[in-house]
Length: 81
Image (cartoon, rainbow, N blue to C red):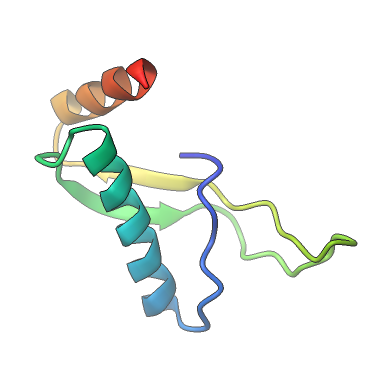
């Protein structure tokens, strides 16, 4: 998933919790509450704020779902919105 804002939390655990909360809200909006995310990973290195406006392009999130059917369901519902 691209464009999901990154948390400014200091600890990895808090950043992970923030990401889980955002993904849970997205699944709720897609009416895919029954989808089980087995793994959630931010791809790439955490970048330092180097732009003149002190923003960082958010790293993409890799989601691993419980089954191939759940992946297809999420992708189909995401296209509808």
